[in-house]
Image 1 (cartoon, rainbow, N blue to C red):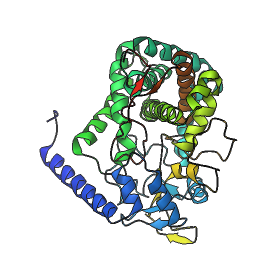
Image 2 (image 1 turned 90 degrees about the vertical axis):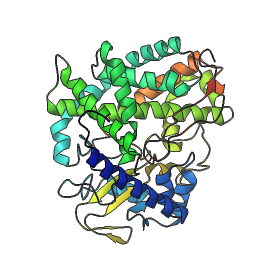
Image 3 (image 1 turned 90 degrees about the horizontal axis):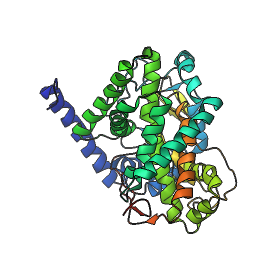
Length: 400
């Protein structure tokens, strides 16, 4: 048991999570599509289609209100009555866990302005232009080291952690610890919707605390808001970059001719990122709590109502995108993806993730044109928010 752990608290929390998990599983077995999303699936998109078929918004048997409607989602993300937490800062009743250390960061508009000065210099155009060179260096270094055939462990995660760490000033000796904390934190957003096993919850808690300590130990340690922004970027940008690269490569290799097209013209990496954000984004859902009664799509939601928005469903909506279940690099530009569309927790990360993933795909296409699938990807269960392979077996990456 970890030092300082409370066995009674662990027992009570573990039992609560187990009960919630069992309830969600039963509700999924009874056909509730949102409960099936919470259980996890290698392909969640049929469940999203089932949610769409229930109308613009509906009440799940889990107690949450659920929508896959792009207009409802866009409206809610722009409406200040929908907040990350309840009026007293507490989580919604439907949320399995209280927030982690920086879980409510940026919940209010005033916080956006207070913290903007801390993240803006990291992600402005000049900083990102310089950062792209760093990302390329990390990509080529990762390809020079890789010996196995797992794209995630050999390339996507090493690049994502090293590049994000470089952006945030993590010193080289601390990078292994930083990378481990980033990887362990990947389940953070999922654990706020789907009840996770207790050991995973404790690992996520330790990862967030570890990142905070790491930034606090630096000789030029930032103040509390600056440290908070760096923890936030670490827990969002690094996992999302790794997952975006993994999702893109999987789709490119699965759709005939798409990987070859990227290898012929690696500058299509930007198009690959844009199409992946539509087709299979690394952030699949957003959740909000009503600060006051809200009428949405003709439905009155009470104060404290928990709204889950399946943002990934918008990219597969046939009313918005022709032939939505095909991945195409030559797809004409359509509506902007709703992934990364809401809240301070995504606002600074979005340009970083896009830039890092674009460079990673371009370098991979330049250096590994013979890449090909070597088996089915492995996904983590109970991951309704963070979407990306845990393992992506390929040939042609290193010494397979």
